[in-house]
Image (cartoon, rainbow, N blue to C red; front, side):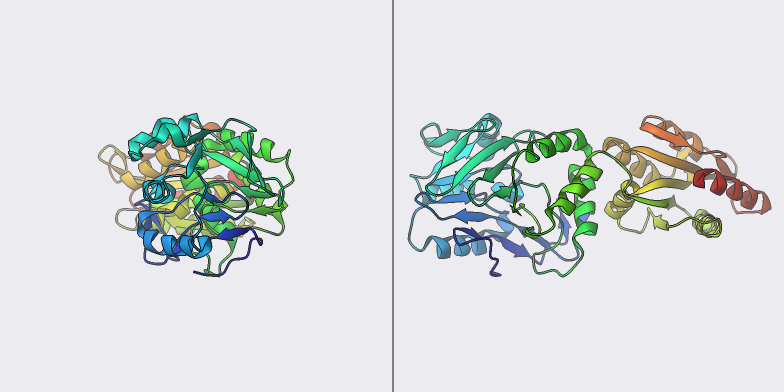
Amino acid sequence: MKDIAISEAIKYIGVDDKDIRLFEGQYVVPNGMSYNSYIIMDEKIVIMDTVDERATEQWVNNLEKELDGKNPDYLVISHLEPDHSANIKLLADKYPEMKIVGNLKTFAFLPQFFDIGDIEGRKVVVNEGDTLNIGKHTLQFFMAPMVHWPEVMVTYEQTEKVLFPADGFGKFGTLDTDEDWTCEARRYYFNIVGKYGMQVQALLKKLATIDVKVICPLHGPILKENLDFYIGKYDIWSSYKPEDDGILIAYSSIHGNTKKAAEKLGEILKQKGAKKVVLTDLVTDDFAEAIEDAFRYDKMIVAASSYNFDVFPPMRNFLYQLKSKDYQNRKIGIVENGTWAPTAAKCMKEIIEGMKNIEICDPIVTIRTKMNDSTISSFEELAENILK
């Protein structure tokens, strides 16, 4: 276990998973994933969450090393998703005197995961603002429903001012990965939590009432410095505001003609002064990163081939994913391609019109198989309008 200092009383007992390639069965994690768990050593000993079953053996070793023969008094369950809850029963069976701390939703869902003996006699039900004194430290609980499951709660340790925000402020990657926090935290946020911006905003308002010095998430590094930066990012992301001035060109091309058109459009945008142009191939590039970039930039152009009197499926999936994550407050351009019956634009426009506060820029450009002078002229006009 990597030695991660939080404080003399609060220890990290989590595990880095370097072998996982798809998190939640869909998100590429080239640098693995961390499953974070913590222990607070005081008059009463508290374990903050468990870890994924992939990491059980190492986690138990880490836990027993810190316990050094002692028995834990409490297990706090912040979130019941299996990457954090897989070892609840193992822990409950091993330490039958240990109390289990959660909210009403926690204990409503818990039997769906585990059959824990004498659960009624062991559970400690907490509500908004309740506290649990364990000696020199006091834990205070705040409910965070739908960030991003209904039972989620966060815990604030009042003495050392440490926040345990469940999946909040998490990121992809192991703790020993040397990489920029923002990129992988953004990709994590929008793909996993992004639908629930309103609920994240509600949690941020609660956090504004307490003095936080350290953030200990369930994934990703412990945050100790420049906390305003991380909280500020979450405020931007959860309010669906564009983070950067730029244009994402997301395209799905069957035979390559739409790809060439997207690349040409990118060149035209740069010539006309676009600060940032990012192209993503929805067929071959990382889909989760495409979602991330759509939320990151203030403008987007979607370009797709027609397919079966509809739109090429990778584009349909992309737009539906954005809609399901409450994509809004953007300018969008539309480009379609079709040899004999172009239908992609109509299908894309119908999905986009179901999103909030979206400005669709004219003209909607139709390509007949390959670009020609007329296509270039339409691209020039679209570029000028989307950059206004």
